[in-house]
Length: 287
Length: 339
Image 1: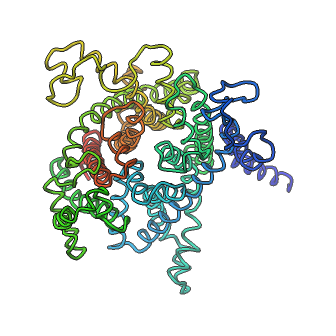
Image 2 (image 1 turned 30 degrees about the horizontal axis):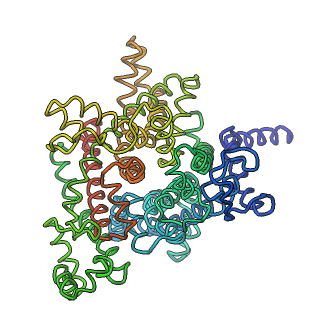
Image 3 (image 1 turned 60 degrees about the vertical axis):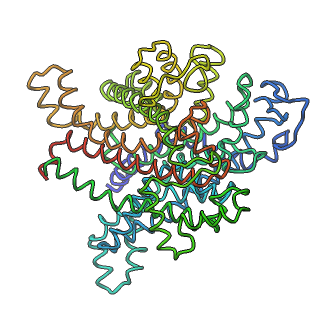
């Protein structure tokens, strides 16, 4: 008897996690593992230095000593692309964490307090939402000066409204649940109710949103850096490297490989985000 | 609620939004760079005390901050967005000169993105799990995952440098005179005067940048259309329509697609903002003389008034487009009118 219950439990358990083992999630995870591993082992294993210039190798096509070719200053593109992950991935991650924090706070307060506060905070959200990302980012970068930190800050400033909207919706749907009322009835403070009973239940959906958004943050970061509003020119950053190839149309490898790196990362994150959403939302599972 | 009342209500809601936009741009313009004079005047202009004094008087900088904001808004309402440091012209004149090129590009891209996205999304849902579905999903994945500036470079390399099928940079070949300005859209203006050579040239110049720009919206719309179409295909009204013996095409078009369109329309409005951001990158690469490239040149020379002018204009366009989308929504979904 007990073996039967454990069997059914097992299969129910397996069914719940099956979407997490879908081919698309696996591909996504594999690609991300490759890049994260690359950022960690890069200095140990790569034969070239990302910054060392070697004019003799200037614009060498892929092959031989430079599997992905060399740029105008003779720097190895493969090395630079692997090193690039050390800037772009943490930058995108930090930007998403920061906008999640801001958006979650604004949305949670708006949803929990309601009334005038809700109205005020959400109208502010609408206004920031109306400014297109790159252009507001350009204005802020122009005001603060171009740097990696400012680019991250900029992305956080422009992308929190989405989290605020979603968090507000989640808080509104959760705040009248019985366990929340129960916590309130034993005299818990508003801060405790919000942080301990409501937000933990909203976190799952927010993490899915953040995974999908990480790809976007990386695209915006690379775009800013392509425009020269990110790291300094010699930095091995993907967007920056694509821009290096702008004037060498016959030397396609200069911008093709860094761009491919951005594409694979964003694609992997989209795969993972879709997979996670399917796993958490039973309604979309059968699709 | 009748349509006109709804539109009226939305227009009234727009007012606080517009005030909010001016507030945000005022705060960025006046709080972030500690010195608005340094941010708005060039080095040479700053060394001239009469220019500095005139600038202070124009923007009320010797007044308290709330008054400065009112001065800022009243200048804005009169179309005074300040003077570009780089071009030395009023920002409004610059924007007027560059907007038509962007409008032409963004509109073409929207048409391509919506048409391709709808077709791919519907095919993908109807022939679910067939090779057609896989191709459509792969194409949309490329659309939403590729950096637009990278796609632009690849497109230029393949179709302009290697194959020589399409022209590369700018809106017209340098040998062809621009048509007389009526709308500012070269394709329309050349047709108005019957200049076929200019029309075909302008059209060919439009193809690459608009397709690159459309890639993201196309990917997004394909995904939403597919999901929404799959959902509506399982609904009772579709089964009813089929069991009545309606032809499959009629079932798909009149019953499934019509209901599936509602979320798609919202995405079209939201992706317009993305399109305008993408325009900065696309225009920069294709040397397309629109406001995106203008904003880029402004930001690389720290031309602060020009960037703020573009930001305000684009935020305004975004709000208006989304108002139009909401109205369209109301027309497509009659249920909203009875509420």
